[in-house]
Length: 231
Image (cartoon, rainbow, N blue to C red; front, side):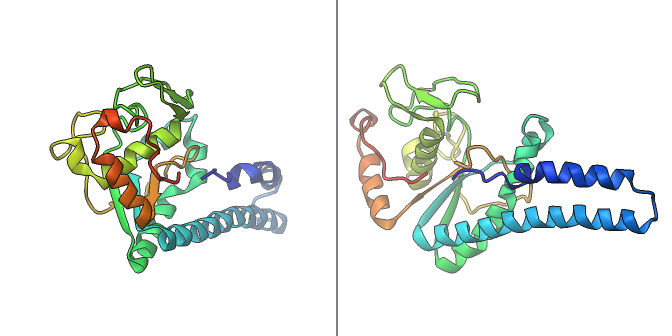
């Protein structure tokens, strides 16, 4: 899902309105009018974001039987001055809150998994391929799998959510260290990251059956398989 970046689209108008507000004399009617204009612009951005998430979460909850999310606390992204604006702009905490109650209404299961190594590990063979955040394509030197970084992460997340027993003992992550978090979603209310919005993967009932069949094979037998996930 692409990030619509509502706030960034309105930044030019907001800058003009806020500069106009700063020039107005405190306590004047013109300052109150300028402040109201800034407030309306912020309200419009919030309404656009809320409308988008309402529609998307309803579609996801009504379409899929399982939705898998990384169990992330992204306060570190809002603290990073390179990512803070995009993190706040995306409003993924609101996405999770809306998804939680709509999934419950629709009988959809929402699962959170350990986020460790989901973007680094190869979804084909499990080898950890180190890469910076700027590298957007996953290329595995072992099995030759090449695909978008977010798609690779989404496949790993879905495999952890669908078949946690395959990853080993409790609290083991996709790279074989630590552990898988198999539990009900825990939504913190913190802002979430925006660029990939690929922290979750979904599967239909038919897709789930096919995925379980793939995951039941040895890793070497499923390298070329294409799990039926939608990212």
